[in-house]
Amino acid sequence: MYNFEFEKPSSIADAVAALGDEEATALSGGQTLLPTMKQRLASPTKVVSLLGISEMQGICTGDDGALCIGGATSHADVAAGASAYPGLAALAGGIGDPAVRARGTVGGSLANNDPAACYPAGALASGATIVTNAREIAADDYFQGMFTTALDESEIITEVRFPVPQASNYQKFEQPASRFALVGVFVAKYADGVRVAVTGASEEGVHRWTAAEEALSANFSADAVPAAPGADGMIADLHGTAAYRAHLVAVLTKRAVAAAS
Amino acid sequence: MSQVTMTVNGKEMSSDAEGRTLLSQFLRENLGMTGTHVGCDTSQCGACVVHVDGVAVKSCTMLAMEADGAAVSTIEGQAADDGTLNTLQQAFQDHHGLQCGFCTPGMIMSAADLLKTNPKPSEAEVRHHLEGNICRCTGYHNIVKAIMAASGQDVSSIAAE
Image (tube, rainbow over all chains, first blue to last red; front, side, top):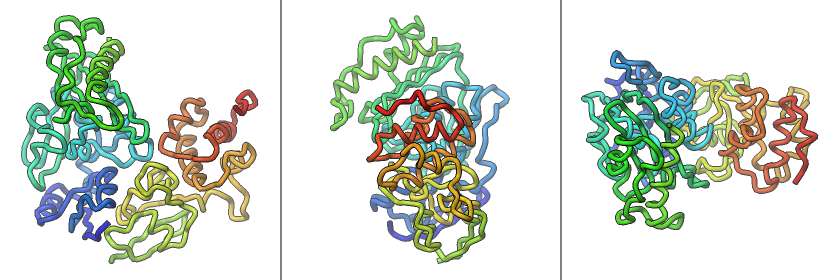
């Protein structure tokens, strides 16, 4: 990779200031960014690590009962510490492998918004709030297509607030080499309805499957899951056709509902 | 260039590193400790696993500067000073848990990470924990067997397949 200047600030304000330079990028674990830089697909002139900011680490429960996770909290820490939201803890514990989970962070995953990443499905299905140094963004407004989010340049995810559902489950059909989701479905049942978010399947990135949400809100059982969505707009590659991914969406939704019931 | 200092296997070590210097590269090229292997250099294979502040990481996917001030354990620190292998290393030898040996440093460091938090893992737990460590020789069977033996479990019923 090309060389760069490295900074590791200890406060959010210093990090935002450091990221103000043109061609600076935030590093929040680096399990995606560093491989990308090795391939020279990214070549920032400055890399600002967010892992030295203690106020962005850790898990707590907010006044409204939501699970609040610091943006720089690792997947391993969420897997071990998010017992208040078992579906989310299980999602975090299934990302990559143990060494990747020790470095990768929730903020890094959401900021990158890989179309096959797990966290976007968990955040969207939970109707999470993405808290940045500047504002709060609803998950429904945050995800804007593959690798695209509502974040501005130099904006940092400081915390993510997950409303805790009555029941939830995440099912991932793993691509065995990368351990990303070939398709992943997160189902979360709240008092006011069911939310279903799908990752890995669509060319538009993570999205909600509204037909399943309506059916499951009326009847939360695997039998109520509708027929697979159409294959139009689904990702097709050497690992699976669009029709295969569409089929998986329905299968995994059923499994998730069965596991959550 | 700036100076990076870390405690490696209990000894404080320093060297100059660039921003882009990876921890794996720092250990191998700056400190001359080539026991940590670089296989894929894409965080897939796990040959480069070391412990940073007690946690297993892929050193090819961590910047050396991120480990400034940290305590790092590598394969070189596993055996006793007189060369006596530790329990896990000895179990790999006893159970033929290696063939070419390239993946072994990472396997040992990942396995040590598992046994620290889960002293008596099941076979399934061992296999799950090794998802990020690739071996192209053994078929994993004897690696799993060695790790279970090192944890003090009876492995006589785990027949070679």
